[in-house]
Length: 94
Image (tube, rainbow, N blue to C red; front, side):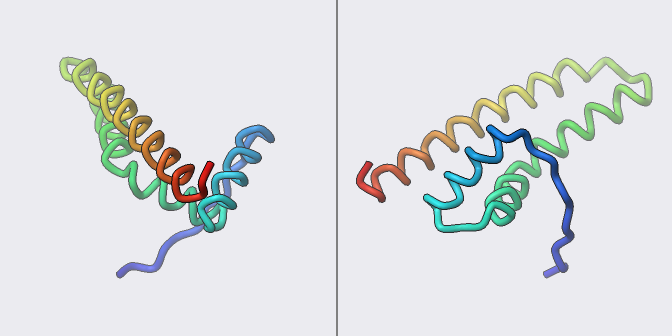
């Protein structure tokens, strides 16, 4: 397995507090939580990259389809996160 890379991210205070709470409830570090979220969203990131490459190369015929795919993926990710939050609540009796 390739060695993981590090990246610094600036967060707004409210997002930081939310991530801190989630990480504490899940028993993971904020960095670990963010790494997991980003890794799980790799397909969406690839779609965004592909759409930007299409736009940059002036081939905008497929951009709308790609953007629709991004929105669909984002909706699924939201549903998955909601499911995970519910599972955490059940696990912690809240």
